[in-house]
Each structure stands twice: as structure tokens, then as C-alpha cells.
Length: 248
Image (cartoon, rainbow, N blue to C red; front, side, top):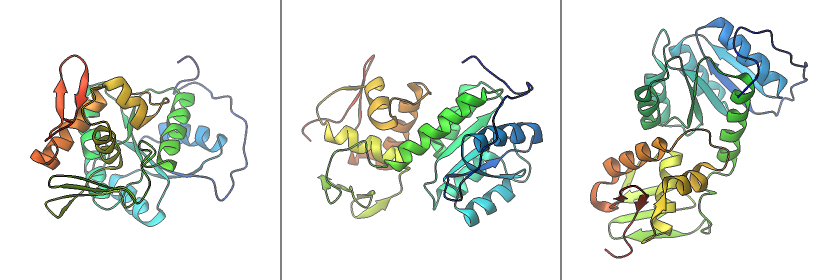
């Protein structure tokens, strides 16, 4: 995307941020990057706070309950991976990773831990704002990947899904899923017997505005298989996508 990048003088208009505007927590130890992102996010109408250490960022996230966390991976204190792991144990707040390296392993590990999206530095600030808005929009419509009534209970052998409570049980034991893992599971089960391409799953679960790539689906399927084991056999249809068998 063409436009201003880090290091250029941004041309943004000042904006009055409403107290009820979405709150973004930036956890980034590079001051120029944090200030740059903050300037554009505030100009776009967001409330923004900032932590320059991972341990401080975790404390602020737990205390302030932001609507979204913009998280660098390489941080003093604790790194972004550990922050995500600890925070995800009790919170479903959307997380967008910031990584200075355009390496698949960084993105995959972050997504496996529960991040919702990623941005590679140096980033275009307008793209960053667009991704923040897109992730918040998806979070506002959490559960929107399914049209099932909120009191719906889906049962498949030992697997039980309570759609309204967004909870999953295997053999009566609760299984902790990230928001996107839950949405992906429900989408696959609601379409039992139908092969869904990675692009279809991205569209249905992540939405039209998702700016990542289809590897995101592979990461989340791998996590579902690990967590659910044999309770929900997600089959790979090579060269196409995934499906849950119509009959067990």
C-alpha cells in the first residue's frame, strides 16, 4: 500500500477523541514507532495508551481492559509471545502483533498463541489503522461466523458446543479455545460434509477485510486438532481446504 511509512513526517489532522472511543494499548519499546502509531490511531479517533515493556504491558492490559492490544514481539521484561500466552489464559481481547522480521515462524507462533492478526515493520500507518478497525469490527460481531441462534447447542459424539456461551466441551471437560478457533470450529461443523476452501474460511470467519494469508487457516486447524484430538476429525482435502465428515 502506498503512503507514509515510519520515518516520514505524517500529515494527519488533529482529532478530539471521545471518552467512549475504542481503547488501544500499544506495547512497543521503540519510542518512535509507538509515537508514530499513536499519532495515527488518535487521529483516527481511538483512545491510546502505551507500555514500553512486556511486563508493564501485561499489567496495563489486565487493569485497563483495552479493546485491542497492538503488541511488539521483541520486548524487555517479557516478550510478546509470553505476554500473549499469559493474557490469553483469561482474556479474549483482540491482539495484533508487530514483528520486525518478515518471517513465517514469527507469525505462526503468534497466531498459535492466540493473536488475531499481524503487521510487519516497517508498516504503513494507514494500513495499521485499517487492520485495527477490521479486527475490532470482527470482535464486535464475535460469533458472527455462524447464523445459529445464540441458545444453540451443537453435539457431535463427545463434542458439545454451546454457541451462546462460546464454550466447547469434550467428554464433559471444557476445552479453552481462542475466539477465532471457536468460530472456525463452528463454521466447519455447520458445514459438515462440505469442503470449504481456505479462502472461504477466511471470508466466513475472518471477514472480507482480513489482510493476512491462508496460512492462518492451517495454523488454527492445527491448534483445533491438538486441543480436540479425536472429538472432531477435521479432514484436509489436499489442494483445496478442510471439512468435517457428514457422518461419524
